[in-house]
Image (cartoon, rainbow, N blue to C red; front, side):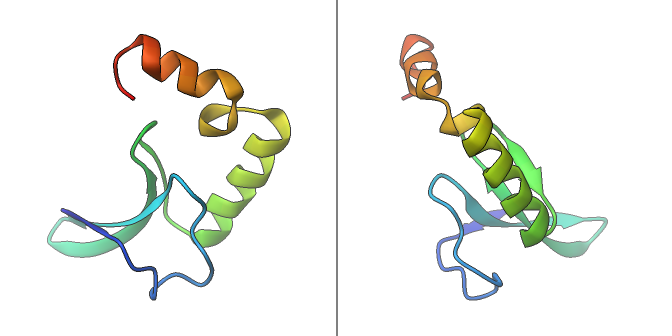
Length: 77
């Protein structure tokens, strides 16, 4: 399993905090969009962007101002 730093396989720019991740499932290479901080994963770019728009508007997950504070308290940042 390896994270891919370049997103040439992505239909658009990957938002900050997300990576194009390659994993193998039943011997088949599968590319997903992964947030390492939260372990959220999406199989399509459209699903990722739908979530990002929703999360930013609702100030959820990595887009919440409290997220970094919580990570610091847990010693993960």
